[in-house]
Image (cartoon, rainbow, N blue to C red; front, side, top):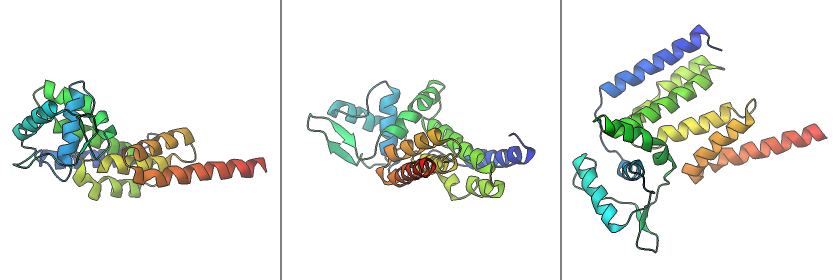
Length: 210
């Protein structure tokens, strides 16, 4: 339902996001170089693993983007066939890849792709939350998670997916399972909500049959 109050919450959060992004510049934080490297790789049409030549090429590209700051890529694991993969999973980077590609095609920094996906996911969560509690939706939308919106990091992805899984758990179970599955695929630590949801569904069906 598109009530005025829900639209007002969405508009407020959107304005705060745009203001925060405009006042910020693309920069690497934490493991951002891993996500950016995988995103660039997949934006070029390749898989998320690297051979030595691809690794050197990506390192050069990340340095050009100012994404390494004199450091080297870390978190690499050998696959046993002369290739390398990162510790963090590639699902989030795969989602961002087409948007990063579009950003680069128009001459923008690929981090714009991360910003777009993060902002869209956060706004989607705010919309779901505002259906039941608009104050909560507003507080979540402009809360600490907003700091991550313009970062090449999976925090917003995880918060949005887990939040959506919880909000969709009863009325839209299938969508809720998909959201929980996305979260747990990116980070196995998020298996908790998925398992809890599965147990709840089984229990409710058992009660109905009884």
